[in-house]
Image (cartoon, rainbow, N blue to C red; front, top):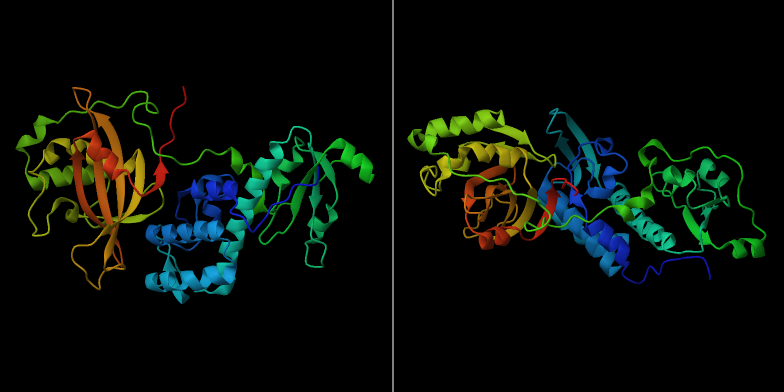
Length: 396
């Protein structure tokens, strides 16, 4: 059996499944999401808007499926980046520290984003394929000896270790930014035919700090898929309207929400995926400024709204047709919304959900509404398009 290799002219299913199954996580600096966390979340340093990060994620997946080279990907993506103002010389603000940093978004930065995600996802696919072989259990490290390889990587070219050797847990490539090293699997008889020996020596780690984890083992990470409300959650919490709130004014109900969330009106709240989200009275008002709190028992569920934002079961992002077009929106013909969902049953066992809904504008993420979804059919309708985060489910 020849060494394993990939046909880069075919859609790499394992690589696509790996990248497509990730959630999204905003991080101002790369080290904010380190090591194995990259297997579960797609992130790009200095991207501080979830809608932009989602578009970048979609573009990488599309490039994988279609076999797009870097230049074609960059050309197709450029209008999107310009639309968001993440192009050329630009200033980005850390939503947590308020630090301002001037960056340049051009070919070099985009090349790093493209190559890193492609190489890691292909490495995950290669790792999964090699681990599935029952007899090709000896792995050989292969560096690209063309004068551009790092000396430490070149020094490991040709070493052969059993695939269970702990050295692979840290040093399975890529082992640094723009690392081009690979691993190939062999049977014992193939090694003997080639005259290659299995290494008996101990080897120092060569992975840089950012890459000191088992890159290939992403194949063992479960894909992000929607929660099965009938099976995955052993017992949904039971919630009922709190009739004690029936006599509270709208201002009193709003203040309770702000107190529960630990913010004041107008605060930018950093949610589970690192997304800066404006929390203000727009969550409680209709387009004409009237209060929504007196409709659909919203006020009676006031205890649950802050919990839904702080501890959601799932977070979704979706594109919806916009009824009124305006230049103030990044996408005048559609709106991009973020949906926090928290699931429960009523006193009759009927499945329902609390939803917190936000919209991405050009300069902020604005609250739209908080309400109860009172039928399972309507709940499932809201669970659509792109799942970007879910709580960790308890195992049996």
